[in-house]
Image (tube, rainbow, N blue to C red; front, side, top):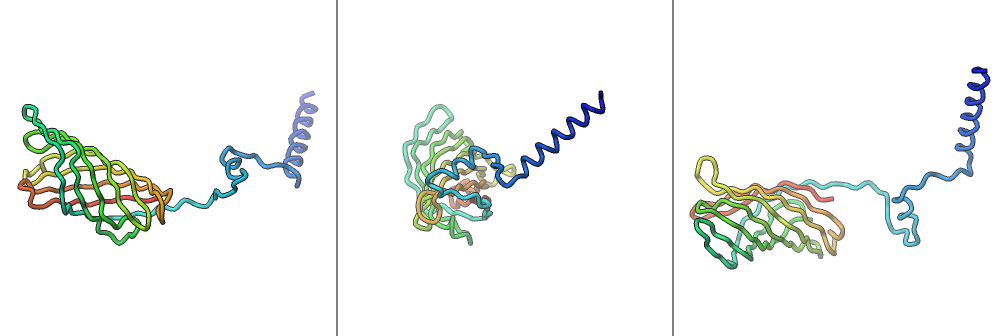
Length: 186
């Protein structure tokens, strides 16, 4: 009896195998495939490439927003500054315009968050940036670590995503301010 059951299972398996290998079998369709095969047919399953880049920025001008002091804290709102990104990657080579809000202690340390835009290639990167400023361990300058996420709108960057991290340096007397950026574009 066991031999008969095993033979039946084997034949059923072989039969299903042949049915699945016929020329008229329909492939399994995922939700992604269904969207691609929709009436528009404009989507592509091409490989998504990632472009890595490095850049430097140096603040060139600042429009001081509103400042308010509370005890030993300083709250800054709507501070706008302009900083060209210098890089060999044309998709991120332009002037970044930042609008920040921040809360600093007496040393200049504290969180910052805001928005940025950059016009390149007939399009605009629009995104967010957030991070924290702190005094360097040797006390020589202010430093910051910032994270960026942006989406391209229009031109050669339409539909692309930018993600990067910046290490920021600023003199205690504000005589210099620059950042080193490392990131990717998809």
